[in-house]
Image 1: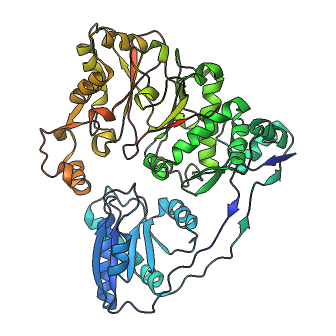
Image 2 (image 1 turned 180 degrees about the vertical axis):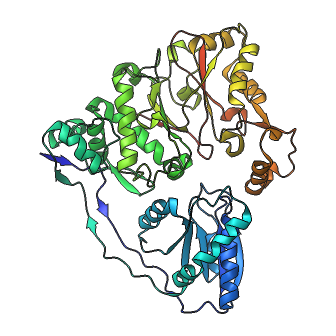
Image 3 (image 1 turned 120 degrees about the vertical axis):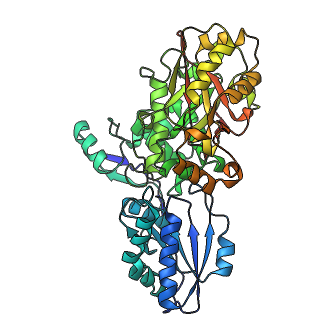
Length: 89
Length: 415
C-alpha cells in the first residue's frame, strides 16, 4: 500500500566550506570553547601543538553554555584565520 | 573561515547531523575516544597528540563536497499491506517510537487534514531545520493514531516548540532526559476529552495519549532527533512516548495558567515545557499551607536538577486537595510562588567541589562569590515558578524540574 513519509520534504543543499591555505605559518589559530568539561583543555592543547609545529599563534574564545549558539562568531572571524571548536560532550 | 570540529566518538552522529543541517556534511571532524568530561585534565590533554595530524589536515587541505541530493515536498512510498509487517517496516524506516503505528495512507492523512492546505508551513524544527508543514504534521498525527479533531492542538504545540525561547535544538539533542510536557487550557480540553483529573498523566485517556504522541513523532521525524543519534539522551524518560494533560481549572482555587499569561479564559491554549518526569510529593499530614510548603519545597530542593544552576521556569503541579489546603491558608497564587521560591533552596555546599568549580567556570556572575552556605533558589525569580492544578482526589502533588536552559511557551489553539 502507498503511505506518506513522515519526514518533511525539502532540498538538501550543499554549502561551500572555506578554502584552506596549505600552511598555518603566521596565522592565528582561534579556539572556541563550548564550555563542556575538558573541552577547553583538549582544544587548547591541540592548538598549542599546532602552533608549535607550524609557526602560528593561538587565541581563545568561549561561549558560556553548550546549550546555546555562540554570539561571538563575528569577533572570531575578524581576529582568527582558522578555528577549532567542540561539539557536545 | 577554515574550521575543524573536535568531539568524542560517542557524539559523531550529532556533530555530523549539525554540520549536515547547515549544508556542510563534509566539515572535518576529529574524534577522540569518549569520555572527555569527568576525567583529569592531564588525561584530556594527552588525547590531543593522537589527533594532531588529522586536525592539521582538516585546516590545510580542502575536503571534497558530496553530490547534492534533493527531495522536494511530500513523498508517497510503498509499504507492506499487512499491519504486523508494517510495524517491523516502520521501525526499519525509523518512523516509529516502538509502539504500534497506524499506516499514514492518503485516506487517513486527508481525513486528518480536512480542508486545510497541506503545504502551509507551520514551523521549522531543529535540529534538522525540518519543514513542519500541515501535511507533515498530519502524517505524524496519523502514525500516532490521532484524529482530525486533535490536529489544532498538535499544530499549536508545534508552533510553540519552534519559538526560540523554548530552545528546541538543545531539548532535542541533550543528554538530559527532558521532553516537552504539553499543558492544555481552555474549553477545548473538555470538548476533546483531554484528561485533567484522576491519573491525568497516566494511561487511559485517548486524547492525551495521541496528541502527546503526535507531537513527539513530529519532533522525531520532522525535527530529525532520532534516539541514540541526534537525540543523545543518556536514559530518557517514558514521557518521550507521550506527555500531555489539561489543567484542572474547575478544581483550581486560582486563575488558570493561560489566564495568568494574559489569555482570555475562553481562549484555548497549549503550553510547552521541556520537562523531566514528575517527582511525587506525598503529604497526608498537612492541614495548613505553611507545613505543606515544607513538603513541596523539600522535594524540589535537590542537587540533581538543572534548574538550580541553569534557572528556567520549573513547574509545580498541585493536586486539588493540596491546592485547597494552600488556598484555605489565604494565599494567592503569587504569594504561593513567592513562599515556594523562598523555601526551595539548596546550599551550594551540598554540591561536590568539582561541581562547584564547574559552576564558577560556566556561570561566574552567579557563583564566583558564592560560598558553601549560599542558598541557591530553584528559579531566577518567584514569577518564574509555574503552578498548575491537576489530578484527582488524593494527597499528592508533583514537582517537575525542567532542562533549565529553556523557557515555556504558551500558544493559542485555533479550532
